[in-house]
Image 1: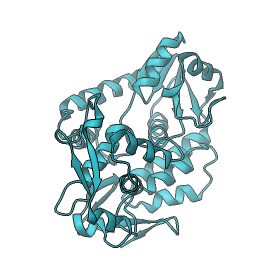
Image 2 (image 1 turned 30 degrees about the vertical axis):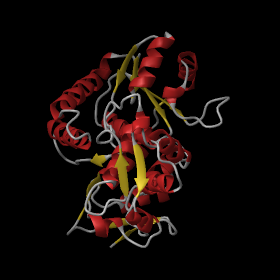
Image 3 (image 1 turned 120 degrees about the horizontal axis):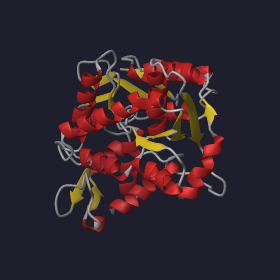
Length: 332
């Protein structure tokens, strides 16, 4: 067997469980940043690696990320040498986005006699809120092995549609997938809808994660750990890791009209955070309060230059926003 994970933690836990077979990780966060369409593998890796390096302000060198991506791709290419390849995923957006990418990728490769199987967990017995495969004990994770099934044609076709929509320069393609029958992959609809909420709001120009983070600070949560807990509790499923949230806070504390003020020993720890996160305190500015209340617009104040899959949000280009009341995208 070859066990394919999209997280280092769950992969390590499976190795500890004693389940037989090789374990590999393919963890490019395809739900974040640009998703190039018809480009070579080398071009895709370079584009994705630059995005990740830039998002950490160079803490992760682009070449280091490219090398990891190449190694992961080479491991996928060797799948045909196994009797069975098992995809391990849970219901969060991070996992679901990688899942549709992997099923799309496998659909274009000859697997020979290799059986492609899927494990996709959205809950676990005894857990009120299932936070993902990485939160299970090794034996609990191993118990999911018997839930696997061979990937179906319906799952593959839906995944191909969803991944093409994520890569499309027209984001309404994602809405069309959500409006159709997504029962083949039961957690995909909610994951894609959560992805759409990362578009800037029509109300104030902030996406859902930014709004949740700003609201946490504005309601009296100044420490990083407290902010993380508050933001996480506003999500139906785990959504943002700690460094992702620190990047969001850092972004709102920059520019000529910052929404937040960072008080601490230096810039926010965007990578490899220190153990003493209490050294930083985050405060909301007057402008932050006005944006949170919808009196000012973050994009009007700050501009925008961001990729959402195949969509480039920037001045001079069509600006797509999320309408919370109508639960749909609008173009302005």
